[in-house]
Image 1: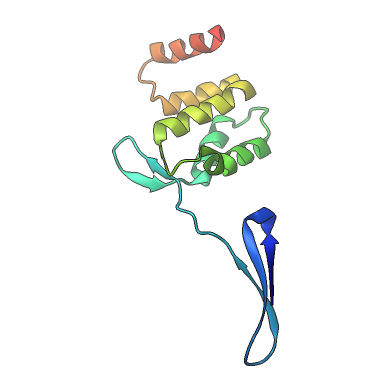
Image 2: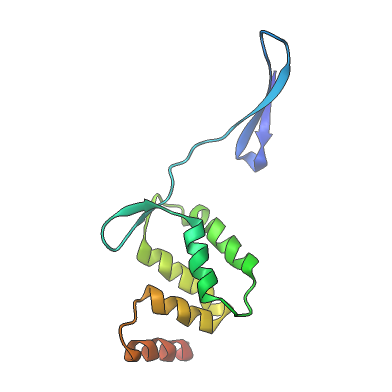
Length: 134
């Protein structure tokens, strides 16, 4: 019957009519895009999961004065803003750290300690000194 863009251009809304019974109904057509793939340190690949990124951000910001909505927005928009089909887990971590740094330095250090796999107190102190120098 008719078609028009819907969902801010992300879908096509179509009004249709059943040829058998004459009832009208609506369908939505959306492009099925390939998911963003994350290349992990061990060489394996997995589909990007915004919930996994959000969990890491929430852990880093636990008991810190950071709005959870900002974390959700970052995690949910990450895939759209990446603009690639594949990204390394290191790059995901770098971008998350860049996001956290201006929000909360303690959360940044917490996230960095897991992401950079600090194996000594010296590495931890180096990261804190680097934060103070910027």
